[in-house]
Length: 410
Image (cartoon, rainbow, N blue to C red; front, side, top):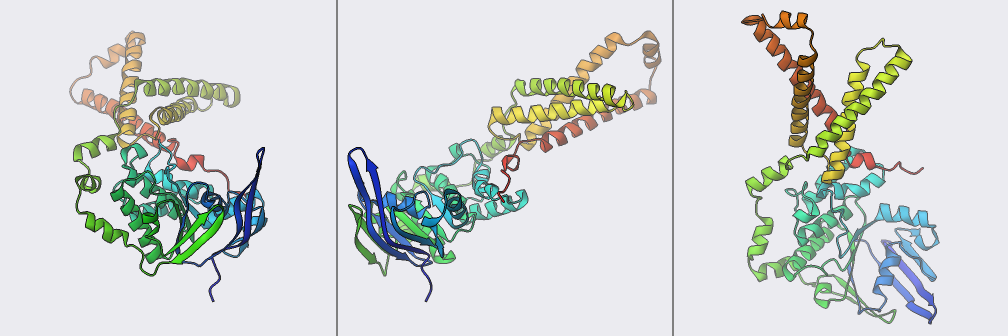
């Protein structure tokens, strides 16, 4: 016989306060098999949230044992329970809990970054999870560009990306309207049915619990009923019975081409970004010149210019990230590199023209025809090459999610 995924035996949870002892859970016995869809129902104060905290390894029982996938979770330390949470459990919250200034893709990648997964693998798995919840066309949208239902789908994808055997959903439809709630429930039913993921859903609404194959009702910290439903409500069918809605059509329609283009371009760059690039260039030039003179004795002439390029890219890219809330887009990097290069050419060209000695002017002014064209093409080539180098450096030093990745614990 298959072993239970979740086994709670004689679990009790007491809280001690100034008013006395609060018995949140009283001698709970529950076995949940792999692949079950269980709804935990109860009014406020019934103990269902306390049970969810214990199931999610956020709290430990006062008495009794909690076993998850064969591990005695209650006996583990805080760090041990954190590992179990990261490896075995996916969480779906009522409030979505998405990072507001990062894209859907980056939000879904986050749990994998805590595992130390390589950036390319993280991206591929996050894209797969978002596709599984029907958001393949919204991966680079931030939460404020998504509807409530789409944000909850991102949260579900984030829970799925680690391939957990257990999903814990705490009032996942509490902030959603009827239609969107049915869409989320239909998605959960499909994940349970097609992927065999075990789902524990906490709710106080009996019509939401009707979509589960098993309903456990709590009252005053005790189980008052544990009912298996042979024919749970089909959320997808209920959604069809509601009929079409304009809001639903708009949510799933293709994005307007003009809006998509503006989002892809990323909007104009604040002038302060160019100013910070200039400050970075001056700092890099100073550091490079100091190193060149002190260590190399002026033997390597390209050190100061190279350090200036690095300085402007690092400071400019990171300032843009803090100002815009995300790395520069492809179009913004092109504009930053080209406009900054043209600005420096005009600046240094004007300074050179004002300080150029007469012999050099006398050598340049007589140029005409083919020689003048070659001179002009040479200047243009230098400008384009400089812009290309700046573009590459801005891309390399954009502070993406992989830059924030913590070192995996040993």
